[in-house]
Length: 86
Image (tube, rainbow, N blue to C red; front, side):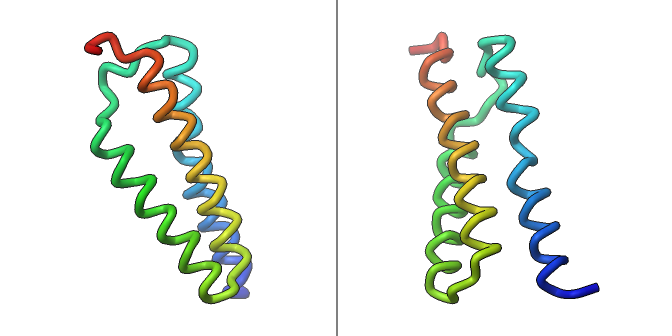
């Protein structure tokens, strides 16, 4: 298998992995089981991958991780909106 295709498939699967969680949170308006620390660490790591992608001029890395950052920032926004502890 071509390594670029492998990278695109891996990036796509990684990027969409949090969408089911985001959909569940939006439907239920419940973030009780979401870890804020996990979200912050994940967004930080994904952002560094985007930076790395720009440094290496690797479009699959940039696109897949940028999308994942947006999904996880959306989840973070939901966390702030639906968190009943605050």
